[in-house]
Image (cartoon, rainbow over all chains, first blue to last red; front, side, top):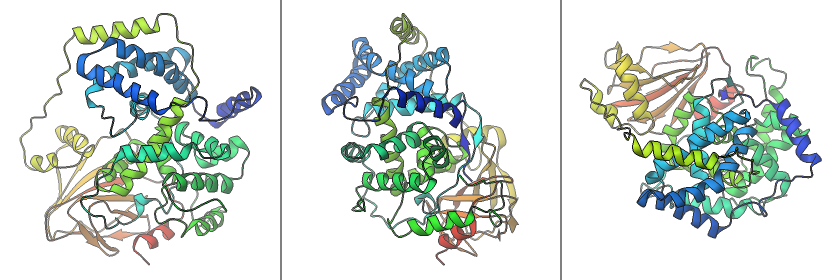
Length: 219
Length: 247
C-alpha cells in the first residue's frame, strides 16, 4: 500500500514513447553511451574543483555533460519542454552550491546529480498512486545480526552494480530502466511492454539478484 | 498491480499474488528487488514512505545497501540518456545564475534554536528524521497521550499520517486499532507487543484487523516513527504479518 508520487508520467504517454523509440530502432544499451571509468574520474575531478576553487571551467564541463541529459530525463518523466530546462538549470545551480558535499568514495557524479535532480523534481509534484509492497522487502524483515563495524560502502556497491549491469541482457536492462529510472510500477511495465506481470517481476528479480552479487544464475 | 482498494480477502487477483510470492520465496536471503526501492530511486515514492525508508536506511546496513544499489541503477541510466537540445544561451544562463548566487548572500543554514523538553533527544535522531522532527516541533509540539507516552505530528507532505512516538521505559501505548495499515519503525530503544519485540531498524506492521498495546522496553526511552494510511488496504497483509512475527 505504498503511495506513489507521480505526475505527467502515465503509462499511455510512455507507451507512445516506447513505440516511437522502437520505430527508430533504439535499444537500451550501456556499451555505447555509458560513461567509462576515466570519464567518471574526470567528472568527479570537476566537482572537486568546484568545491576547492569555485572553478567555472569545471562547472562548464559538468554542464556540457549533464545539462542535455538532465533535460531529456525531465521530459521523459513528464516535464514540459520549457519547464524541463528551468528545473535543469536549478539542478545545475545546486551542483555548484553543494559541490562540497560530494564524496567520490560514496557515489559517482551521475548518481549524485541524479539524486539532486530527482529530489528537485519531487518538490514540484503532488500526486499519489499506490503499488503493492513486496512481502520480502528487507524493509519489512527483522534486522539481521550485523557486526557493528560493518558500514555501508556505497562506492563499493556502485562499482559492483556498474560491473554487473553491463553484463545484463537487454531484456533485463529495458525493465530496470523502466522501473528504476522512469518510475513505472511492475504492472505498468507489463502493460507498456505487453509482457506478463510474472515475467516482468522475474526478470527484474533476476537482474537485481545479479546486481547484488548473488550466486543465483539464470536457469 | 493489484488494486489496493479492493479488500484483499475478496480480491480475485489475490491467489496470483500468493502463488507468485510462493514461487519467489527462498530464492534469496534478502530480496531487495521489491518495488519500493525502484519507486524510491525513481522519485515516485510517497514522502511519508521516503522518510520511513531513509530513516530505516540510516539504521540498517542491509536497507542502506539496497537503496545504494537502486540509486546506482538510476544514475547509470542518466549517463545513457539521450542528449536534448538546449535553448540558445542555456550555458550562459547557468553561468549568470552562478554569478548571481556567488554575489548574493549565501543562505545561512538556520540554526535551530529551540528550548524545550524533549528537544535534546530529537537532536540525536538519525537524519532525515531529525530535520523533519525539528521542523515539525516548531509547529506542533509534543502531545501527551497518557503516562509516559508522547507523540508529535510530522509534516512530510504526504496524505498518510506520520507521527513520532516517544515511549518511556515500561509505559504502554493505549490499546488501539487502525482504520488502515500502520507501519512503525523503531528508531531508538525498543518496544514489545503481542506480536513480539521490536528493536532499532525493525518495522512493525499492523492492519485494520489488529489491535495492539506496545510497551516500551526497560532499558531506555523508545522513539518510533509511525506511518498510517487512512483507508488504503495492503495486499496480502495477513501473510506479511505472519512472516513478521516469525510464524
